[in-house]
Image (cartoon, rainbow, N blue to C red; front, top):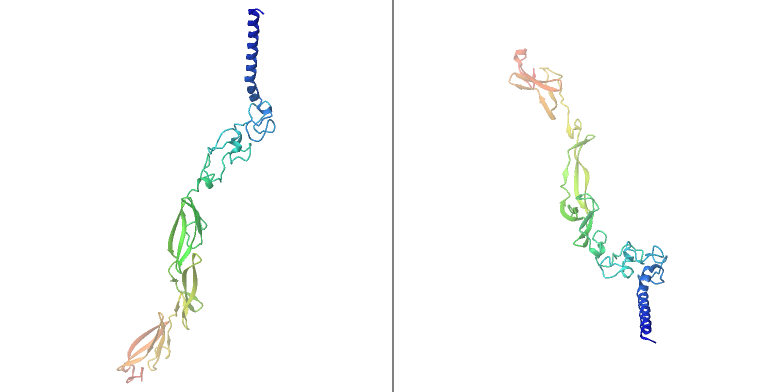
Length: 302
C-alpha cells in the first residue's frame, strides 16, 4: 500500500472517531430535551415522566420541575437548606409552599402573622368584658414578649375589685372601689316613711349592690305621709264654740305641723279670748267691766 492510500485510511478513521465523539457528547443533551419521557426520575421527587410527574406538562416537556410550584422548582425557597420534596415543608411535588410552619424555625416567608408557632407571637390583648367595667367579671389574655398570659378580675376585699383591661395590645390593671354605701331620699309607702340603703360590695370578681328599704317613721293619725315625711293639715277647733266671753274655752289644733292649745285666760279684769277663723287660731282682749260684768275669773267674764 502506497503512502497516499495509508493517509486516506488514517483520515477516514479519524473522521469516524470524531463523529462517534460528537454523537456521544450530544446524547445527554437529547436525554435532557426529553426528560419527561426518558424513564428517569430526573428531579428526584419520586415520580417519573409524563403524566406521572406533576412537573411534566407533556411528553415533550424538557424538565420534570415546575418553576411555578415551590416544592417542584429545584430551589430552596424557604432557605432552610432543603429543596423540594426533601424539605419537611413539602407534602409532595404539587405542594406550593415549601415552608414548614410548626417546625420551630422561622423561615422563608413565615412571619409572626402567618406562623407565630415558629416566628413568635406578637404582643396582644383581649378582654372578655370589653374594657374597664368593674361591674362585669372579665378575663384578659394574650401574649407579651412572646409569653402567654391570662388574668381574671378578682376581689381585693369586700369593697374593692382588681379590674384587668386592655389598652391597645397591652394589658392594664387597676384596683377600684365598688362604691360607698348610701341612703336614698325618704319616700312614702302608705302612711309609712321609708328610705333605701344601697350596699355596695365585691363578689366573684365584679362589683355589685343590693338595695334594702329601711323604716324611718310611722305616721300616726292625724298625721299622714306626704313627700317622704309625716305631715298634718292646719286645723282649729274651739271648745266654747267661738267668741263667747262668759264661757271659758280652748282653741286647739295643728299649725304648720305643730300642735297647739290656747285656753282663754284672764289678765286682771281683762279676758283674752281665743277663737277660730277657718283653720287658724286668733285672739282678742276685752274688758269684763266694760261688758257689765264685775270680774274676769277662770278665763271667762262672770
